[in-house]
Length: 162
Image (cartoon, rainbow, N blue to C red):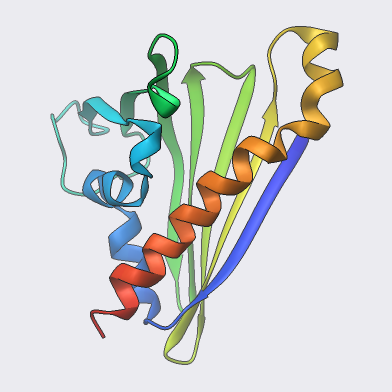
């Protein structure tokens, strides 16, 4: 399985960064406009519609249409883990339906004084078997602009609100 990872220092306390990433509104705020994100539905672990916090067991169904090209790509992920301890936190979402054969995204947060280290790690397998395997080394070309934009937006929103 291939991996992609990006790490950024945010000049904001972990609690603020953690809370921001724990909601659908945070996801919407972080996603670049060129992805044309549409959140179709959000179910909490108990079946509640649009829960305030994405707890373990929450399911998020969305669609994207990068650059307005081609049909909308449907994507459903489940939050499979969500933990917070003194000085660090993480949550993991796994795609259960969508364009990848495998997509496991771990969002990690590490306190460093009054700042936070934000780390995104994605483990993935492209579709189409051996053809997907051949193009996997080039997938970074697609991931890099999206995650760079997400981290930049996190810094802009949370560092400005200090």
